[in-house]
Image 1 (cartoon, rainbow, N blue to C red):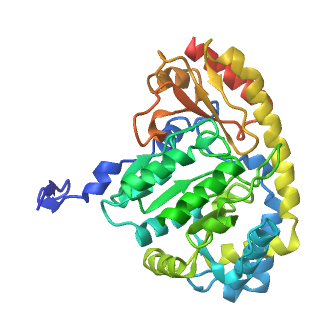
Image 2 (tube, rainbow, N blue to C red):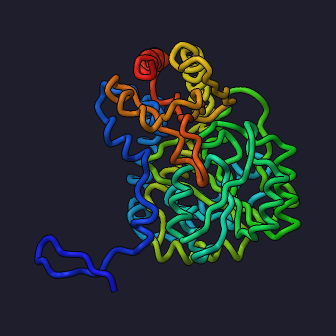
Length: 401
């Protein structure tokens, strides 16, 4: 047994689990800690704009719950989630093209917990997981903690290549594919409908679980909505759909959910019992009350309109801010834009210079499960106003000059 020294007594203590050292912390969280000063224009965080929260509506929902149903709100609840909230979520999912009953859903403490529950239910150490390249960073952490072998799927500006996916499925025999197909984190790209259908067919042919994470899908600025992968018939019995209120209502509520076939959903419920028993009752009741009393779709439309202005402000300023030879995408929604500088640039090495100019971004390297492209960066365009974005890009230009 390996031991570590105690700072208090000097006597040895058993070492931490190997996965703690092997996975490490989140570079995004580390950057946020460094750039918390109010004068910093922070393009690094995936933080919704707090000035656009429906604070009045959320406050009214909590007030109604705590004055009208306090005994229930302050009590323990079921692991699966409150029936009122699950019914409302099922209705919203069904209206968007995926027939769903309340019992198809498990409420989670943020969709991040849903990922952890799925890893617990599906993965043994050494199992293979396929991910996008680049991939949502916190998903890489979850799968790393589970001891999984993480393999990136080749793709392009539209997302994963279904032919490359099938080749990897045949060769690697993975347990699951994790994907954020709509306004992906970190790139902001959206997987086209024909590729979604092809991914579903690959899963049907080879027995692959698809974990489809959709925290940003309602934040569409332009273009037509693309159906969930989970809505295709080929994906019906082997897909999991994750959702969240973090980007459309408020991240502080920590409310997410997963939709999964019955056996997997039960396994996740058992894992959740071991993790936190249930998601906070008062938050669930308040969210259900909000959905009953307020127009969430109208609120999301207002938020999306503001986010579109902010995206456009960033797109307008990037030609002067980034070095000649850089390229970037134009996301149709979501929160993020992906930029690539000329090959000689290393965005990790350049970040301290940016922070000195009171601006921050996230280097692209940590988002890769395989060999990273060190010239890339993720820029979040929703947290600041268009005027602040313009100033932040001027600072970024000075840092990269």
